[in-house]
Image (cartoon, rainbow, N blue to C red; front, side, top):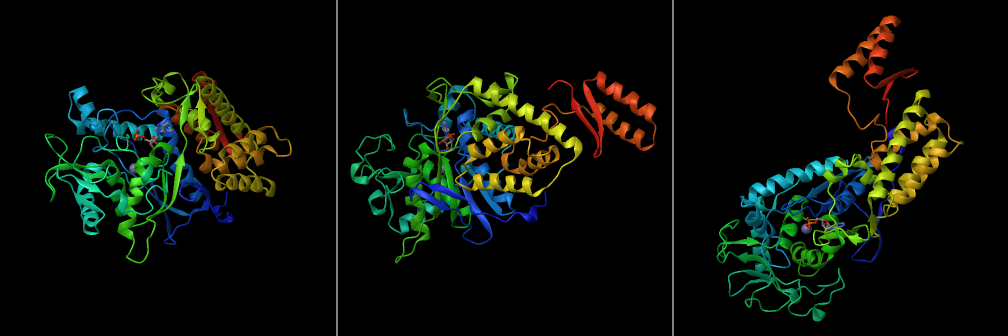
Length: 475
Ligand code: AMP
Ligand code: ZN
């Protein structure tokens, strides 16, 4: 497809702060600056987490479809995320459990996280900053908040954000400050050192903690989870975020607090400025009726999906069939059905393209409609319906169908053009090349011999106007 033929459309998303559809805008006129909250790397990401991480990929693919530029930052939380039950750093709890250095655990799960993203064909972010390597910028951010009188050092040497100072606190989540009661889960637990019960720690004094602590002007300690994202997003995106993405549970307190921490740094005395233009939240994934979580004992990992013999892109298929803003229920039956359709479409594509690929006006207009669906608050289910309808639509010729699949691959990311999920071994790839040479030399005897050899190895070869096409015999 000739990319220059596509005019960029405006991507509209449902903004949590304004509670309505809003256009996504590149405020610097160059690149869309996007931040997506990343994983806390003390355990494997489950496929529910991946649904949320795929949200930033869908936004990116939509914007890039018409060649617009995106800068996406996703943090790696490897310190400071406290567990709600025990008020202990999740990394250190896991370190005790495994009797292993917390940083070594963090690096292992970080690398598994990248493998999982690859498995569902998520395009890499431009940078994955680790919280533990961004301590200096957090200290500077906290110091600036102290200087602006939004934060104070408590009697315990921890630094707290003064919630009541931020006038519009609660606007993002709807949790009004005067309705927040002491003792709620949003608090960092133990302290009598803060001035108001809804204040939260930006920096925690080390106390008797000895691991994952850093020296600061306020003594030894470690950062709060919320300040990590404020500091990293503003630092790496040059003081403004056009779109901030995360799961719905992050709306409060994580994003509410982040907004309070970030806005004062980009505002001036006269004007309050939003550091984040738009907030995008993805709804939760349920598995067989219940929210996927460790406590519900229904966690499914990418490795489980692979073990059952499914292509992990079947997960991507399922996520695309559901709007990000609604809860969705996943089951093994839906993964299996998605896998069958995916395989059938790949097979069909190989057949359609035998007679070429035709960029007709009809085909182009269907591509354009699907692009519009993505731009309309990521209405991926609607776009998926169009793909389903295309498969059976006789008003499209095979080459037109082939063209549509090729053109929308960048949008859906389902690898529909893959011959099969299995890669060819170097030996088989070499045989295919030898056959191309034999045919070029009009050595049809040798070409037929190679065809039979390939067939015996399970690879079927056909010749078309576009040259040699191969596929695995069993899909
Ligand atoms: P965590 O690693 O626990 O910090 O979570 C990473 C991301 O996954 C966050 O954006 C969460 O909001 C999101 N998340 C957690 N559970 C689910 C779920 N069941 N479905 C979708 N997203 C989730
Ligand atoms: Zn975050």
